[in-house]
Image 1 (tube, rainbow, N blue to C red):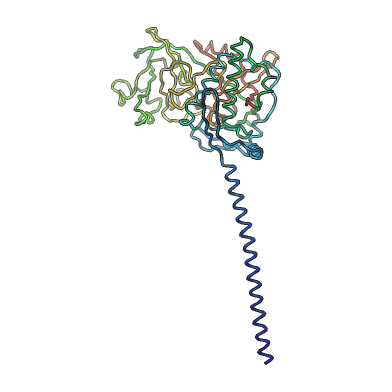
Image 2: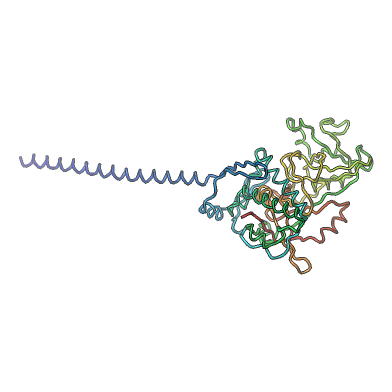
Length: 426
């Protein structure tokens, strides 16, 4: 009887213990599951908060209506500390940079800012129009570039263009020196962000290298002659469907494949014949002003290339990349196609890395001239193969020149290196 009681007691105690363990396990599981769900909810909330916004910009007259959500202060802090992924011309990742080491908030030095008022207004208006007309066709311009690490957005860039256009128009209408030349006005109305050069091959370089480009005038002929024997061609509209031209190097083209008797004769349009030097300068600068032997003159701008990369350090005549041209009505800068390119002006235009810096950035360069600080303002409204990627150089559009000698005399007054600043409307 005592044995039977003990067995029942042990069974009862065992069942109670199992019940307690089961209840404890269930409670612990519920707590863990609740915590896990909370963590997942927090994770997805963060993902929603930090998913990059796709700007939806609507432009009506001179006003911008931006549907993009404002960045929170926390997001700005995270953006500033986050590394920026630098891409090449095919938008493939190359390396990352610490944004806070490349771009930092400062004040503009107290010297007059130099530029031609009407020319700057023209480039500002034309650049804003490009955003207005082609933002859906050219998503590359919705890249803010490295200034995203300072919380700068594409709408900020457009607002900067808008404000400057209004100020310039008012000042020009009142026949007065524009307020945009006054560093006090700039520091009051704009964020000034210093750009420290980043050159992977020269980590000691801090200032930007300022190269110069130009439009050269060249004599040319409608027909091939012994003097003018190097052609520039234009692609026909149907070339987008049959990209035959991507198979041929510059050397193939100059061997005569498009000339009578050549294997691709009739597939392109002959625009003009130049000297070989004229062709290389036209390709290098992007635009050429041809004075034809019959008295006609016109600008011609690069249109499309054969999709072969530009090789830095290789001499021009050995490059495989070849550019096809179109006749245009002005000097042309950036654009995803020839008919969309921005009309630009010398003295107020910079060419640079549009993908990693961003189209439409207003830049002031500072250098010392005759012992005095000199400030020059321009717009990033052009690009080129040498700038993808390139965070240590800008190319300054110097002007239209008859020859290299005249060009050299002009640019001897310009700096080789300069400190650069971005201006962003507050």
